[in-house]
Image 1: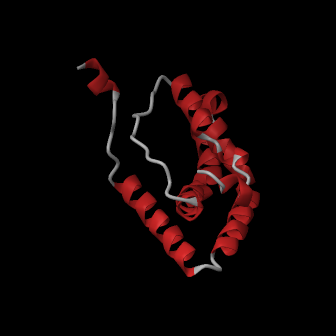
Image 2: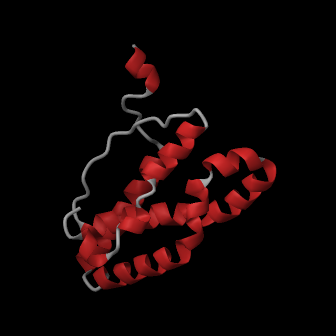
Length: 135
């Protein structure tokens, strides 16, 4: 999203490659979903809120998995372990949201982005899943 990197540091939030590697190590491959570009910074921040909110439990889940599945967690737990620095990312996101919230239109776009992210997570639309590729 053009301009997003001006309001928030994006690099610490790029976890898709880490998750993909962890899943591949376990012999699992994620379904692919169609994505569209965000309409702007505010919508992207709304989505980012939903993603970061979802990661709040990952640290606790990682500790649980380390006790229950120590081998699997040691070879494929990078994504879950990466949530330990969530506090700083959460603070940075809050600061970015505060910055855009001065404009009521931007607030509406943030909220709409978050609602869209929650909807997509509840009802994803697979695209090019392994079963479809084989057909």
